[in-house]
Amino acid sequence: MSGVVDFRTQIEDVVGSVMGVPSNPMVVTGGVPVSAYALNDLDGTDPLYIGKATSSGTWLVQRYGTAAGTMRYANLSNNPSYASYASAWAARASLVYGLFQTLTGV
Image 1 (cartoon, rainbow, N blue to C red):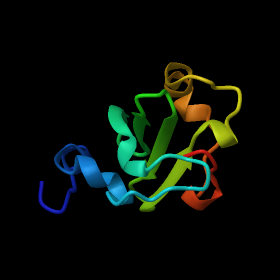
Image 2 (cartoon, rainbow, N blue to C red; image 1 turned 180 degrees about the vertical axis):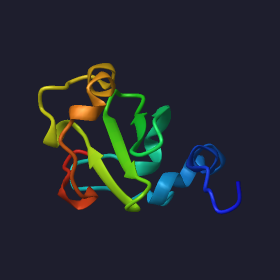
Image 3 (cartoon, one colour; image 1 turned 60 degrees about the horizontal axis):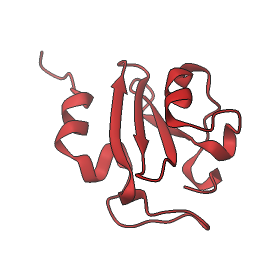
Image 4 (spheres, one colour; image 1 turned 30 degrees about the horizontal axis):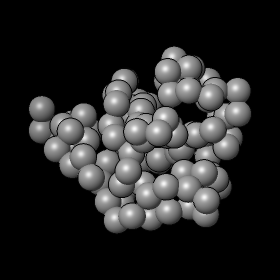
């Protein structure tokens, strides 16, 4: 399958830098380093959903549009109805997503 990119393999191969999220300890004001998130779940192909959480329960779901090449992010700040990772992951298709810099508490 020449020319086809397997994003799942890339994500699994590059745990510290998943789909454009830097492995450096980037922090949004009042948040935790992005590197503190552990990869929990992957689902789909377009969009590809990437679920992560910290040991303290802070969650982050990424939605990667493979055709468009866009990454959008969801967390508690733009989805206050989903307090737990489990509830957010179950509702991943209907979460509100935005650009990373619009999130708080990441």
